[in-house]
Length: 206
Image (cartoon, rainbow, N blue to C red; front, side, top):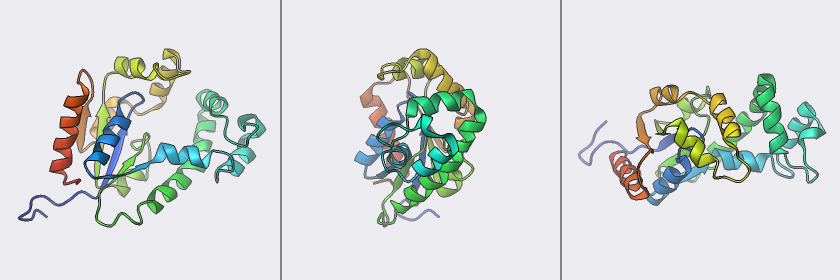
C-alpha cells in the first residue's frame, strides 16, 4: 500500500547475479545506502571451514578426499567433483542450502525495520529464496565481461569460469525472475553507484 510518504519500504531484497557480474560491489553500495547485508557465500565458507557445522555431513557423504588437513572443505577438490557429477553437486547443495538458509534468517533477527539484502548467488536456482524476499535485484552483464572480471581472481582460468557460468542459471532466466535489473557492463563505478542509489531511494532502503 502506498502512503503519503511514498511507496512502502522494502524490507527484504534478494540480490543475485552470475560470477563476475559485480554483485558484491552492488551489495556494498546498498549497505552504504543503509541496508544490512547477509552474504550467503560467506556463510557457506563459515559452514565449511575448520569445525564448520556442515563438515561432518560433507565428510560422511564424500569422504576425506574433499577435506583438508585442517578440517575445512577442500574447495578445489569439491568443485572438480561437483563439475564432474551433477549428483555430487546436488548432494552438496542438499547439505549446505538448509544450513545456509537457517543461518541467513537467524542473522536478520535484530534487523528491526531496516532493509536486509540477502546476497544469494544461486537465488534463481533455489526453490526457497524467492519466497523469503520481497524483491529480487539481478546484477547482469555479458558472459565476456563475466569471464574477463573473474579471471582477474587468483587461480581462475577462463575455462574454469566458463564451467561455473554453464552450471548457473542462464542470464535470461535470472532477468525473468527480477523485480529490477542493473546492467553492469560498460559502466564506471560512479555510474553504477548512481543506479544503485536511485533504486535504493525507490525501494526506500535507507
